[in-house]
Length: 213
Image (tube, rainbow, N blue to C red; front, side):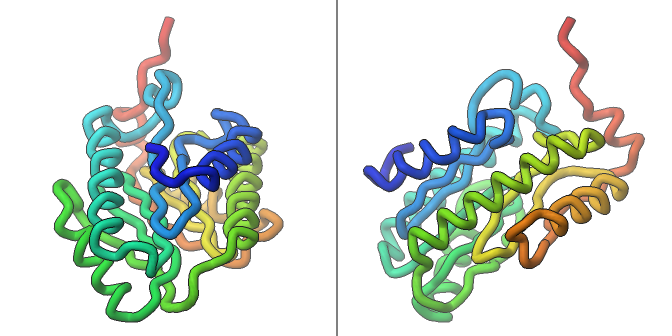
């Protein structure tokens, strides 16, 4: 998925330093159109609360949306796109309100998209320094989740844009409250936005993967 040349390589190197266990499934490119997807690997797939079919659908949504946005929007806007459970989070910057709406319309027509949360700001594209700072904050949040011990790191997707941290996942109310507390206490996080599907403790027991023997 390397469509973006050297800047993608630099970003991926920076993220890889945090370790695959820290990433919890985040893959992001850095140039005007950006996609956040899932990292492959049996361990991550096994602990993800989405079905394997849903995980594949999310990856397909991200790839197809990226391709269409590249063709119709080009480099006018910087868009981060993250799909979880076929719900798409759009962050980044658009050159105009018309472009912001156009981006949402393009993504809404992608196969399997269930809903869209459009958090794109109408403003100039962020700088590489700003994006690197956001990546660092995301890494800190994930590290804090690991340290928390009472949260499953791979149950969440974490995205940070201009100091605002977005949380996605299928979680219980207790987990939602706890992850919010952890994220708010992370250095560099200015605001927390929850895009979480709340499930009951009984549902959580049903979807938990069976430990490998």
